[in-house]
Length: 248
Ligand SMILES: Nc1ncnc2c1ncn2[C@@H]1O[C@H](COP(=O)(O)OP(=O)(O)OP(=O)(O)O)[C@@H](O)[C@H]1O
Ligand SMILES: [Mg+2]
Image (tube, rainbow, N blue to C red; front, side):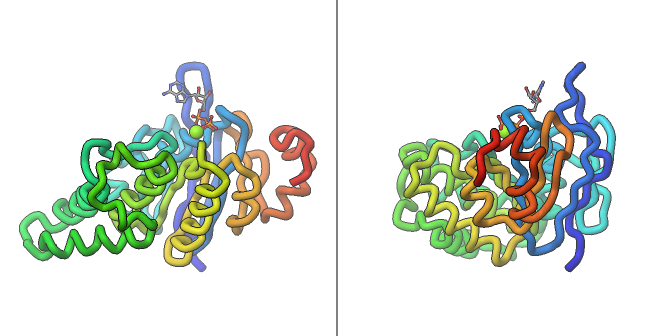
């Protein structure tokens, strides 16, 4: 297996606050790694640095052997990294299908500006295949803003998938979901992890322990621990700072 993403000394300061502090992280192609840590640990900021939404104060990000540090968000997206955000980022007034079509098209038209290779029909077919995968095909004509919270979070994943990423960043995909919706989303994550490399930020430890190949723990922006679910479960320091002494 080869290393897909690697950060070296990645750091982000917001004024006097170091939100991400000298983080060395890497993920192998095909893996699903989770990042856990208390509120404010820097997890979302770490994703924003990778996706190009914000620029690092220092450090380097290498994706598939290329330095992508400081690239704009659209360039990072075209390289093959997609994010499904913690705060849902759908177009609420468009239909479910239109939301995924727009994302699919944004990738295609920028790539093949002069070609008509991707027809209207092909993009619609791709979008429908994604709706099938995320279990929303029956709602394709519904207005996205009218979906349940759980379905909106899954649509957010569908929008990310529509850009055909190699690496998918999922920021709290089960936040605010009921146990039934959480189960549905876990199964979806497992399914897409068969063909994608995934970094998952998640607070629900049952989810993290079930799906992760490897877990990274952030604490005040710094990397506190890294290892298999068992390593993390049994790590005294992690239990003390994050798991509140609770055995999971
Ligand atoms: N744009 C910003 N300007 C100033 N401070 C910020 C900014 N974004 C994040 N921070 C701060 O950086 C720290 C890390 O925030 P971040 O959102 O990355 O945490 P998180 O681990 O995702 O937390 P949560 O689990 O609550 O989502 C926090 O102290 C936060 O207040
Ligand atoms: Mg966050």
